[in-house]
Image 1 (cartoon, rainbow, N blue to C red):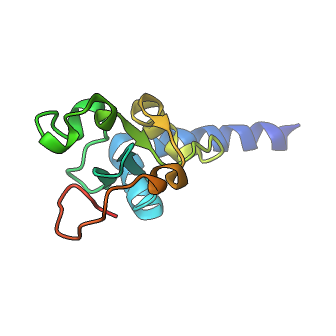
Image 2 (tube, rainbow, N blue to C red):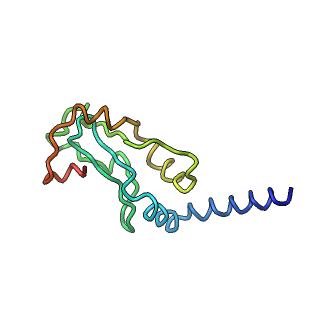
Length: 127
């Protein structure tokens, strides 16, 4: 019984440490860089979340400006996350709550079928 109690306390401390702002972001940067991808329905806008020191978590307001003519159609303005949420990865909980849950999930295979041609020089297409 003591072993279970100490294990739960250690786990709780680990979870708390992972969600301290500077520590949590460093963990995301080391473990999860390049995993969190976003796109609109036709792939004209794609983005990969960075977790550098000055990178903020993605929100609806931080993603593409609505004045872009390529994204003027309401359907093209909807941004989707291309990754599934895994609640077992406790170091991501803060990011999931703050950012991920605000975006609907869409499988990349569905978007890739209707994707506009990829342009390497297009700053709106990371991948």
